[in-house]
Image 1 (tube, rainbow, N blue to C red):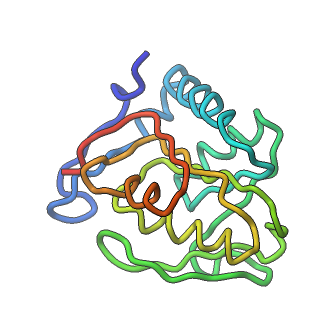
Image 2 (cartoon, rainbow, N blue to C red):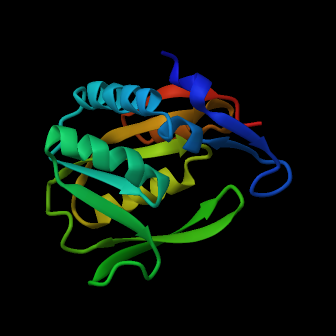
Image 3 (cartoon, rainbow, N blue to C red):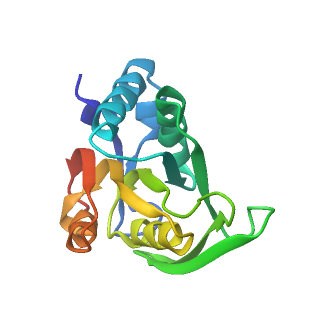
Length: 175
């Protein structure tokens, strides 16, 4: 099964000029979603890690399933003011705006090796911010796994240039 066949492309969403890669068509199909999670689990075994983290919100769908299968703690990287306890916070640029991401200060301990999982990488701004949050918490980034790499937008290349290990399941052009 090629999970690429289960990704819907929507032109001009969320704004004109963006070609949105929609994963809802993947996760609503039990066979495609199962295959996707199995593929992420296989790729995860290439990394040395003791915790899994994901960026809000679509990354939660994939990372929580992988966390359950691999029996690893799951860390939420959330939007500003969504976590109730004390947090580390970082502001960052998106391809169509700015955002703030936070993590509970007690989620990551010194020298934890954290595997980051997300649905998609475009320009890499969110992924780089997530890595900085892990490092700000005194953890180490074990690597990244993305379901989709929008290869022509350069996000994976940016992470690799910063010496992060990166895996993805499928690729699409970003435009």
